[in-house]
Image (cartoon, rainbow, N blue to C red):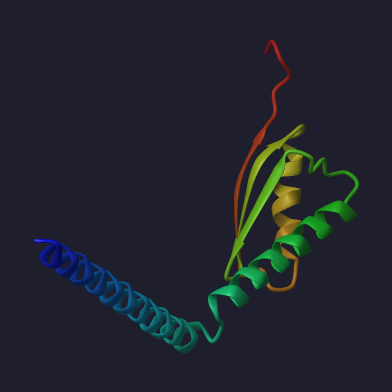
Length: 124
């Protein structure tokens, strides 16, 4: 009886080790093929794409900071492959178009989507 239990434990461990090894190999090959597909389609690895998107986002923030008439404290910017989305609030309606125009002027920006709204004071 003890020999049979020992055999079952050994068999269970062997199955677990084999399945973990197969899972790790499958995950590595799937990641490699996904990386190859990404590289073939866009020419950049996912990490490089994220870095480029962050760099573009920082460029847009820097361009907005140069315009002192823009209150960019409540503005959020996301960038993906040259497409920039601006959301948040501004204190004056005239700033909505100004923010969009400044963002369009940044090198690397291909399109701008503005979801800005005018911030209303409390009680109105």
